[in-house]
Image 1 (spheres, rainbow, N blue to C red):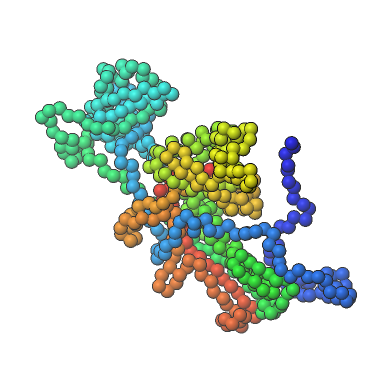
Image 2: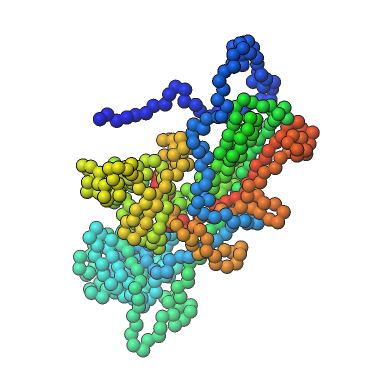
Length: 494
């Protein structure tokens, strides 16, 4: 059977909100009753009018994502600062080998690229050469050294005279892909304990790493205006909007859609925004502190990305999920995740899960999926469990909307994996540890001004007379930022 490829008709409508480029008295400002104008009153027959405006696109707004998975809190500062715990155990990459001396690189499981370590003399370590079939051995740390006193360790293997004598060791792989972590310590009888001097360079106590993050709110604005004459002009079309606005006054529709569009902008700004670089064009226009860190940017900088889900092979897709599980195992193993994705990924996951049914290739198994011949066949999945992880899948309207990221040209983001539940952080403003959702929005508010979603009306129309302007101007403003706690537990599908 040939593939079905739908095409859009020549009359497919586009955006119908077109602002006037200039303030001028043009023909579209007035009714035209001339014959042939479309408002032809030269004939006496009344057409059959369908007054209700047809809703042909269903729900058009994309807001609601952050409200479903996060929370909102007020703030009264120009920035929000929070701290996150570092890892408890000591594990490092090995970047060089010289005899029994190992050069220590960045910490394993972090984005840290700095040299220096917290391994101490007298500790015992497990070392792997990092080869495809790794050789693993245990050793005693007999000394530390290098630049700054802590960039190398000298080890004494328990099962060989030196590192080169370890059976099966691949020293070249050890120098480029090796790993080491501390599992204990050992001392001779009658010796001093570790850290016999608080300032002993070889035995300094291990200090917890301080990790502080910050974000700042941005100000979003929009505006709608209508003249006094147009507010009293009644039409024959009964308009309606998603927020419940209805009636025969067209400006009600325009104002309602402006409000809905601004609400969507608020959410999209929290998802897409990024801070401006020092020499960027945006910094030149808005200042060096312009921009804010949105969800996608936070995951790209502090989380994980993958392009493995949604391939042509279901087996490969399942393998992609297994790789994701391994990555999450490194980050604390939060067992419940929400997967918000576009149609491509959603269908690929459905196909992947259906392929696990032994009858998937030749027919549909009724019992396994609780389907019967007398009911509608369910070919979709809303969630699944793999190993100890639960994934709950949901289509994300923002990634499917053809006027937004649903366009193929913006397919660089196909979904996001977000941990469910809450995290514990230390809030420096409140001064104590608090449990919050991994995602929450901070908006500016005080006793005198709440800037979460601020709306005010000016002019002399609509009962709120503030000036002699024969118009009603509706202003929208919000000041907010997004806090992404524990971004190391998030994953972006690109």
